Length: 129
Image: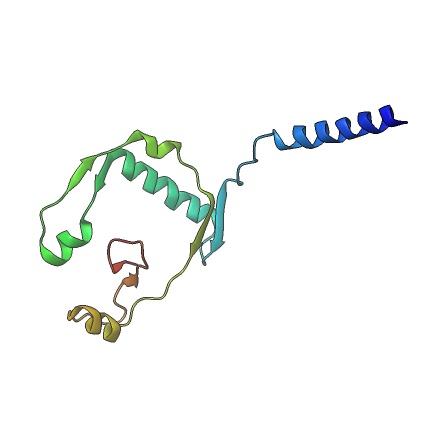
């Protein structure tokens, strides 16, 4: 009897150990779509972004528009093609109102401002919508 109990215990431990050795399944590829766009439209936008990043990377497009800063452009990176969205949440965000934008920056913009708030750890306070 005692030998049978030990065998059962070892079998149970072996099953538990084996279950813990497998790789975690990766999150499914795709978007968590919380927008009015279709998944096909989001996929096309993603592919366009990959194409753009594979060709060149413009690090300061808003500064160029709003302050006349010199372009800071890096060569493209083909690794952009190796990235697939994995449960990437895509949701619409309301524009910052012209009053809120003025209070925060002192710059006047008509509504809609075309900007959204960027929460930390974003390195800017507002970004183009």
